[in-house]
Amino acid sequence: MEKILVLGGGFAGVETAIYLRKQNFDVILVSDRDFFYIYPTSIWIPTGEVTTEDVSVPLDALAAKHGFQLIVDPIVSFEAREKRVTLESGRVLDDFEYIVVALGQDKIRMKGMEHTLSICGKPEEATALHDRLNSLVQKSSGKIAVGFGGNPNDSSAVRGGPAFEVLFNIHNFLKKKGIRKNFELTFFAPMEKPGQKMGNKALVMLDKMLASSNIRKKVGSKIVEFVEDGIVFEDGEKIESDLTMFIAAGTGHNILMKSGLPVSEAGFVVTNEFNEIEGFDGLYAIGDSASLLGPEWRAKQGHVAEAMAKNTARNIVIKTRDIDAQYSYKKHLNILCVMDTGNGAAFVYRNNKVGRIIPLPIVGHWLKKGWGWYCRNSKLGKIPRIPGM
Image 1 (cartoon, rainbow, N blue to C red):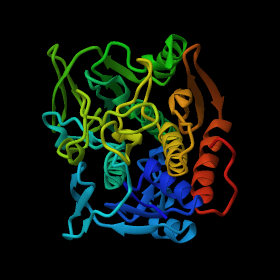
Image 2: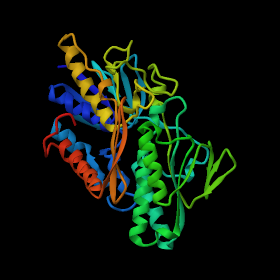
Image 3: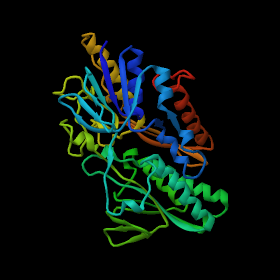
Image 4: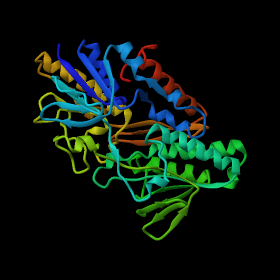
């Protein structure tokens, strides 16, 4: 039976390992941390609704349930042509017919980013956001700025949804505390129409949501730098902030940039629609590591990463059995999420024909909570997977 190495313990890597094991392949998954982190539900960590443990699944539990081998050891180098991986411990992995690259992405560094925290960064940053927000609550007043950046070389590498979610959750958290009027909340982004990829109708509704929540908006000017007490923009304006949450745009993973793999201008691994890295037999790149094909509004999301994972597992099976067929991820390209607001949510959907955002008062919040419970327990095999999810 072929031996397969999966690099990365996020949505793409875990899903790949699970599906390859269902086909009885010998699978090893390598991760730099010992837990699978459910980023979409980490949005509630800053307001104290959940903890890191609540949104994490031990990888050893997943390995035991599904039968793949687990190595928790950061990767220090990947020599793609030789199919050789070197780990921080010095261990070398180099005897695999197939390697699936699911290492995620790095973030574009900007001047002064040490003065910011991100909900899409390391898990400990979400906890730090909680501590900083609590400090401001103790003072009963403050200025909070939440925003995201863009990658001019790849429109898919932008994560705006979690920024809006954290912002609206903070708004409603402060309302429940009875101190919202003492806080100045600001949303910021360098592009003219942040959220545009959701569609024009969705963009109008999002603006209404910001206005009705008395959240200031600063858009359309390049971010020059972050400073200890705010953000400085190219047009000369400075937003004062006691707490700045910023989601930087993605760029290629540093290990992959030095691997010898073909990469896009933005640094992501170039693949075909079947996630094969052409010219590198037996190598695949999926999830945030891969350069996403498709329309301008395409976005790197968890459900797309999992579709890539399942298709890659199927394509490996097909290849080993010499079947003339392949699975493409292109038909799975859409924007699909429940954007939580703390007291409800908005259902966001975008494909080539429509872009909509539908308010889901109250029930939407619990719908997303339910998805988090489903994600955790279905991966652990405690409940059945819903077909197509």
